[in-house]
Length: 344
Ligand code: KG4
Ligand code: ZN
Picture 1 (cartoon, rainbow, N blue to C red):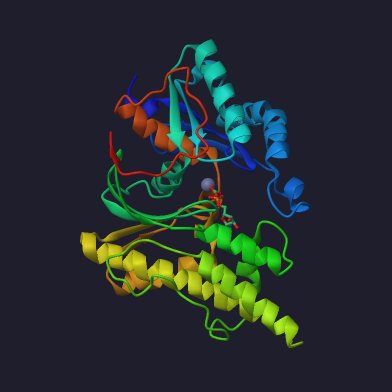
Picture 2: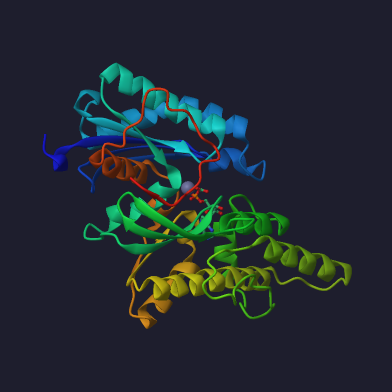
């Protein structure tokens, strides 16, 4: 079989989306089905892990069937299975991992355990067929914030990550205290459009230390909480749109500054944005602007591939398979798996 014809079935169930995708070769996406649980968790103000696992169990086979049928292929046509094995919620991950292992065993085809965060970066290869490493990737999701020097398809160098909260986590927590529904990121994004980003001067931690690619968002989150509390105590009107816009500006400014700094240090001319927070309109706009100003090409996977999906997992899995990075059937869920420097 020629590599470009290999069919990879991707499975993703690390948090609150059950997803399956069929990919031909490395970049030709035949289907990508995402069943979101957001409405289920919304009434609790966040993801309830036990409910998430149960919903994945109910959804996973119908989602796989739908992905196969949209791709116009059968299970017998699939050559390999890529599945997210971490990071994420352990019970949720186990559903995808168990199904992938069962299918791999039953069909006698290789299994490929994929790091979800690497998957987010690879979403960009699906949106840009000509994109090749090396580049700098800014990974901003609900659980992680990192700048990665992607030197090759299996060669990553961690430049820096968050010391505490992830950017998405800060968005969700700030939204929650402002009484906005889960997930908070898109809500803040929407509200900020009507606000003044310069109304409140929130702190930008670690922003002045050039060459330091670590982030910290927990102080910013506390500053927003303190602001809201003190305004309430003084019986002053809180303009939520201004709070959202000012908070969003504080987050995005740090992300943009550090990404541009990382590009000058590495001398690279490609910047790739990845992860759920990439869907933030202000972050995308500011990064694109800064990249253009610095003569850097900017890549953004598009809204559908920013948030969790199995297409990016299939894509990462395909490139792992090229270097023989398969998994054994004792593959287990690794909820705390990190994005680390490594060379396959
Ligand atoms: O990558 P992702 O789908 O899941 C994880 O791997 O964590 O990211 C989810 C995160 C959530 O924190 C959500 O609030 C955030 O991405 N997010 C956004 C936007 N859309 C999703 N944050 C800011 N602005 C958005 N438009
Ligand atoms: Zn994710």
